[in-house]
Structures are given as structure tokens and as C-alpha cells.
Length: 114
Image 1: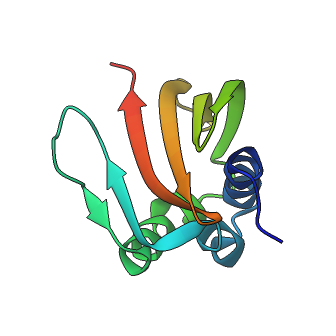
Image 2: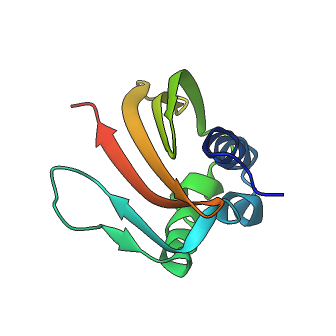
């Protein structure tokens, strides 16, 4: 059964918080692209690169957690206002835009707060 864009966004968030790299990567397409505006080009391309990036610091720290403060779903697009908690550091807010295709997240745009 194909998951909806909202289900994909929620599943990857839960896998991120559980530090389940396989479940996290299962939400993304093989050719996923990650953007960090204002950079115009993807900062990461492909599922193998995504896996390598998240296998590092994000999944190595079990105390690193993210929560969704607000979610908007419009067709294949999900927009999350997230707050990332790292003990001993100030919380970080960001906006994450997920574009979904064929039952997977095809692209992600991270808009970080200053």
C-alpha cells in the first residue's frame, strides 16, 4: 500500500526520533534531492548519500529529537514547522518542505532559522 505524503512525512519523523536509519531511508526515493536554500543546487543527491549523511551525527545522538509544531499538506507537498531539540543547546526551528512522488519523498527543502 502506498503511503500518502502526510504519512511519509510522519513516518520519516518517527524514524528520525527513533534513530531507525532503515525505516527513515525507506520513506525516501532512490533519487532524492535535498536542498538548503539559498543554495540553488541540491546539497545532497541520492538515497546512498542521504543514508551516509544521517548515519553520522543525527543518528549517533539518541537525545537529538525533532517535533512538528505545525503541518500543512497540499497535494504531494508537506510543509512542516519543526523544532529540533539538542540537550545543552538552544532549540532550533526550521521549515521543511517535502515533495512526494510515487509513494516516496522525492525532494526536501530545509529552511533554517538564523
